[in-house]
Image (cartoon, rainbow, N blue to C red; front, side, top):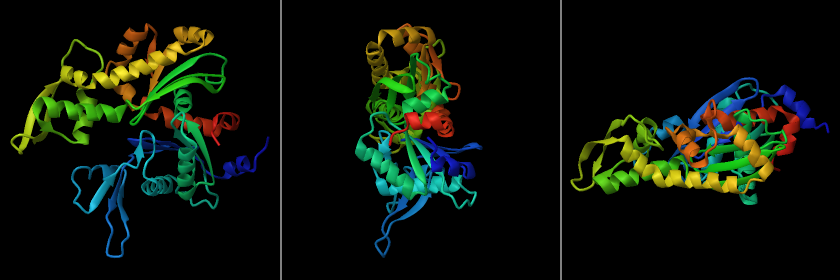
Length: 346
């Protein structure tokens, strides 16, 4: 059925957003990905008139984590993939949308946003209101496992099983998709942020060393791993000695990091197994042939694909560009009117 917004979209550059707990990616129709920023906002505390003001958003705000004075709060407005601080999220979305949409068109853009599977009605309303308030003409909510699968070029509309594991900052979502619908899905709060927290806790317990989020993330990216390899890697880590109360540098190795991440990784593996156990036999047969596809930033954890291959005896493939799978998939769905009407949440 023809829709007036479909006609208006010809004259505007519609926007797809992967609103992630850790990072927000922006895709503009006809241009591709135009923004990839940390989902972080620095807020100046109340001034003499009792008003708060936004000091920085994205990369600039992330640089302030652990370094800001007491009158500036550095906030991550999303928790576990959904909006936890509405006002701050509204400012962040408006900033990203305005920077992506510089055409000066008199027609507001349609915006599609990737959201976690199983999002509640209240959470849906919060995301929609924040996006409309940030300048959208119309808002479409796309479940992240579906978006990730489309972004990884899986044939989601076919009558066949497609299995996606999307490991983001706040959640890991495992889903089996067929005929443009999610047949079974499992979401766990074991993902990138929990990995960082686990590294912080491990170093605190083993070395009495306190480190910040950014250092934990660097450790994960440089020597983090999920499965043993022939080569042990090392890294210098700087933090605060909790006993002496002075700065301290230690050296840790990749085996220690794997140990620190073990519980988070086990939770992801368990979620994959639960979804496999609940997949209809006909679709399970497809997955035996086609395998499991990993997407999201967490898919970049070294040897995670090897571990899942070992645990499931199935082929495991990392998406070509896992960090961008959700936003690319959301963008592709936005450009395919029939698929958009089929998979979007209203």
